[in-house]
Image 1 (tube, rainbow, N blue to C red):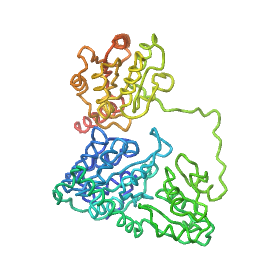
Image 2: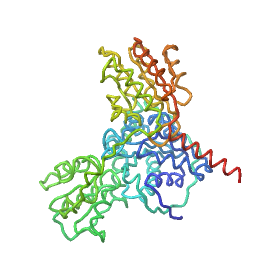
Image 3: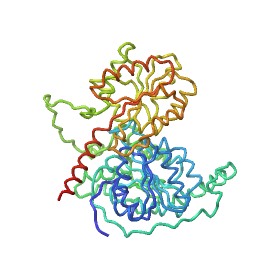
Length: 539
């Protein structure tokens, strides 16, 4: 029952350990990575035999978690918001199969796109799936909601989503632990056809899901995480969702706003609180991270003409994270003057690490491309995407995981030659293999460069599913042996590497080049650990 200082991600992880979770499955993606990493690093989780696995992608992670739920045990799958796109098939269908053991989808959204391609709002997916959504406003609630999520999941035999955002995931606060629960025993579903989504079965279970909606609504109306707080000034009523509630409170030193406030941290929306707020106030201000999901819903619920404002009408910015100043401005508070940044302070855009193997790969690629000109290199998601910036300016696309190969194939089918795809080793096994199979089957004229640094470098050095397998995968798919070329990206090999790239660019067919050298960051970590072990052994 002791107190820990934890990141929001870590609070969720520790809660899973304490709530009787038997397995957690994920593909690393900021800002969700630390959840699974915490469990993997936990001696307590290890002693309890909790499975903590990095998977090939988010879809396989979600399916593994669903399989553990099928066996009656509590499981969790974690991903960032765009990872839910990859797992959407199983996520939406799991709402129809339902759960057996408790099943939680933790999805970390990234408003302001600190490390993402978009800032989509995962609450839209949760509403689409018609399952309960929990949105903590602080680290303690994040911890408590894991316990609630597993209980709700097993009570209603349904998956539950916990939606967090970057600022909650990566900020720390004190968290009081609950008494640990034992893990479930293996227990098969009472109905062995529950997970068989043949149309006749799925139609019935979809109706079962619809029948649960009043129960979800009742739980939300009665939830201690959804509250109504009265105020003296009813000129405006405030709806604050999840972390936005904290931004509101930071504008009041005594944490007592003068206006009535509805705090929302469990969905579906608590209709009782919202009706009371609407009836008692002249207008409504909605504070929410991400899309104007609640604002739009309230405009549909209430149509008597009272003003409902938020992100849609410009009272709050349509994009990016909220913060106390933005909320204060919407409430009419005078804003502090921000100090201007002196001109002598140079901007420091992100860049590839010194000693990164990708640097030599892109220098070689740039030289090999000189005869063809720019605009022909399709890239992917990973730290190598930074090669779009000076001084390399090597790549021309970055859309989604695995898109480099399929976009290069499409461009080649349109007649662009050469068409080059650049993809990392982890991204290749995440979403690139099927695209390469399409290219081989259609005999596409593309060159695929698989940057193999032996890790998932962008998110902190997690193991890569591709380690030691890339050539075998390419051969198995059907890439010709003589056009699978492995090079070592070092300055001393520049001339030879550039020659090999030129040869494969000239080849009219599918070719794969694999620049292979360990990530400089994981190499440094490995050497430091080796030094520590050697020092310890000599004491």
